[in-house]
Length: 638
Image 1 (cartoon, rainbow, N blue to C red):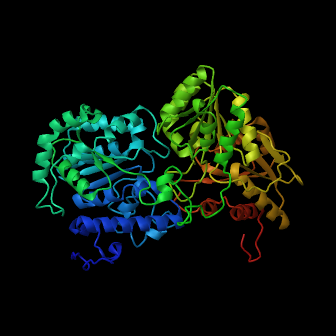
Image 2 (image 1 turned 90 degrees about the vertical axis):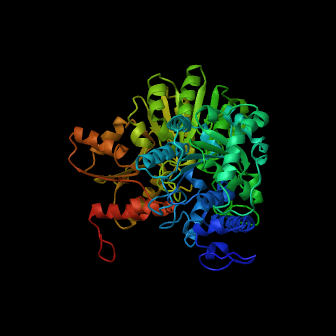
Image 3 (image 1 turned 180 degrees about the vertical axis):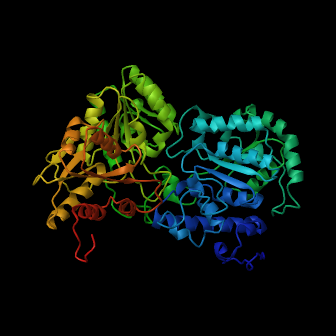
């Protein structure tokens, strides 16, 4: 059978992504053709992510759901809000970005998250979890005010249901009675790690009742808006209460909050998805559609280990193995250190917010499961929970990505600092993180944590220093102690004989110029310093390890130099370099003081490229040092 589309006819061996006029033509396909399209999309996802890295398992799980959404709704008039946005790859393929898909997450390429500046089909940026229902409710209410009759659909992963913002959104959405608001609960029993907690058990109980939807009247095999919709929706609506009582036996939390609940439905069955989504469009109030999917569907290594294939680097498709040999990262070394320490200290507890593998805490979970707490995607709860358990005599260590910790500022201030609780934060992914882009960089933790009275911040530059800082944070500090470290591995080359958890001042020929840095980029500075010396440019180095509060000796050292350059992998406002500058000015410093920091949000690119753009690569640092020294390069340029 052939189907005529806006471009050309389809046959069995057609490359559908290339010839279809998408997303419009997806409505004209038979269910069988949709299955072929889904297979083609999965092949494209696996092939592309194996070369670019990215979020694989989550995207493989929503292929059929995304195709069905575009069959039943009309994007961009109908708005899709993805939560978390990393599950939007199929949506991108269906909305005009197939020809650019090989640039996924690359510099000047397409983003791995929804991005309105990239396409009118992306309604809102989404890099963090649990935001979609709030966003969708706002769009739906704005549409109602504008008398716009289009639908707003929030596609929410079940992991996002562990975040408190989801329930704030559900509460408000149910109260709104907006009949153009639909929430799709994509239930694959996973966040990034395996879902945990009472809600996971609750959804699991509902998952087993797919007969609730399967018992409805079967409809035509082909989707046409004239033949489907009203009769099926009316049937489902009229029979809903009977089926709920006989199959489920109870009312769901979603119905109690004001939603019509439909599901659960097989998220890999196009026919069932079309049917339930069409039904959802017909109700006079908000609707929640519960869809069961398999994370990693269609690629065996990903299905077997969805947590490990949530976010992956480049890999070999045949074996599923990473392109490069696996090395221990800062996250791994952090997790292993906690395991070693916990063997001697029975008060040590480790906490994660659904990031068991990402933060290296899988090592701790295997060794000490009773002292390991995965609280789900709930950073605010994690911080308050840590404060509470600390006050009961335990030592909590909460490992969290820098960008995710931003959500818990209020809890850091009120529940940790004011209460005087001793909580250690392992702040992972500090600094630039590469291809995930603006939403994931850890550039702001220094600025906001340094406003917390009593806080201490360490920024180790290598694994050995990480251990020193963790020991001090755990056993010498008494309040909020933060150890921030970067994504990736330790390939540093600087001299480690004088490592400590305070600072290291290297005064070679005692020049008038001091160059300061901390963390990962100190190694770049060390290399730039060596290159400068080879060119006859002399300067002294100051490596900070405990970066906040600023040590009085650091101030005294800086005051003795006429020229200072501070390189910092952090946001400019509130940075350590800015704070040191203020202290120097208050002390009457009258020399030259230059700061190299991040001035805004940083677009996706490799970490090496991002550091170069920020002026923090070794080459860029050398150029800055030359400029201050007034030296010229061989081509006559400073």
